[in-house]
Amino acid sequence: MAGRGAGGALLRLHRSPLPLPWRRAPPLALRGPAAAASYGTSITSAKIQVNGVHLHYRQTGRGDHAVLLLPGMLGSSQSDFGPQLKSLNKQLFTVVAWDPRGYGRSIPPARDFPPDFFERDAKDAVDLMQALKFKKFSLLGWSDGGITALISAAKYPALINKLVVWGANSFVTQEDLKLYQDIRDVSKWSEKIRKPMEEMYGHEYFAKTCEAWVDGISQFADKADGNICQHLLPHVKCPTFIIHGGKDPLVPQSHAEYLHKQIKESRLLLMPEGKHNLHLRFAEEFNRVVEDFLL
Image (cartoon, rainbow, N blue to C red; front, top):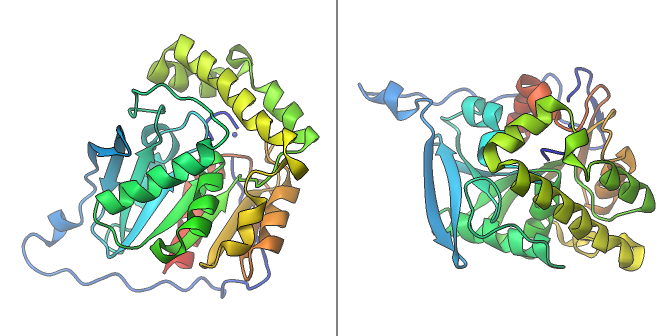
């Protein structure tokens, strides 16, 4: 997520390893004078009404395999997935990145965090893709977006092709609470991370929403075992790829290992030098392994 982040060069894959060297499908053959334009780099931006709110999304590519990118806390299609929208294979994939309600350009409404906010986001995400006429699609979820993706895959299995999550957790520990409190005051964030958020939201909305998020995520600590979506993990049946940065300061590696243990036949890739936003810091490497998994 925007506030919960930077990537790694060395890779370590756990169980059910991807074949090495990475196997990639050959590019699709394009014909006709419009071939180059058909698979150009253009990114469309639009809004569509879903569940009573107008959700903003960006879309690119014309491939048969639809992929939804789910951002993290305070994140948006604009802030969280630039390298993926630009560089994921547009011949093979149709890539959609959305702004959850209250984030990015999906305002109004203002963002709030009721006890079921992750389930609400999961329903919004799935219903958005159905409104865009995608019958089946894969999910790429970062941090909070990873939690949303896990819930979506568990609750709507017939719609989900494959699942990739990184920087995600399915429960909240006392250690996690301390990490969350450390980012409550946005004035203490580094300028590099804080400035784009302030430009997008304005300081007041940014600061207020960050505090509300800390309270919202902390409420799970009051549940048995700090449960967010632990109970749903056995219901994730689609092929699942879990990626984690060994130097992630916001999500301990134990969370990724737990997901890997609970989701049958999932793959776990550790990036020892990776931090929270490994898909941005090491975008080329990240995009390559994700594409290979999705093919």
